[in-house]
Amino acid sequence: MVVSKAGHLTRAYETELSARELEAMADVNYAPADVGAAIASGSFRTMGMIVAPCSIRTLAEIASCVSSSLLTRAADVCLKERRRVVLLVRETPLHAGHLRAMLAATEMGAVVMPPVPAFYTRPQSIRDIVDQTAARALDLFDIDAPDIPRWTGQPIP
Image (tube, rainbow, N blue to C red; front, side, top):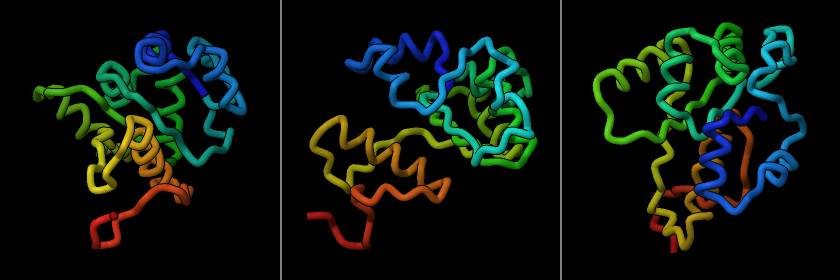
């Protein structure tokens, strides 16, 4: 896991988790400035990466192949190695520059996945919405989240 300075601000504003609690959820944590970390090399095998949330700045760096941190370097490595990169872009509304960056990232192989709530699941809490979004992102890596409701063609009771 790589958490940017802005990512830690977002964590503090939007969750009850401390930095230490968040880092305890990961197998490995990397500092954003550690551009020599294992994930900065294509020879280090991964399935890819999820950038969540993905700021417009991070999207723009990835789309323009600018690597100012380990986060954007790792994304660039995944793209050059043809590995999946999923960008949960949360900005709204969008202007043409944002859309162009999304298109550029998509053309390079990234998947732009705005975390849009799935209301057909009838979420009862913010956690339900977050869990559904996380499960959909994991689906893109063929990682199953078995407890997440899925659309079956019929309304979920």
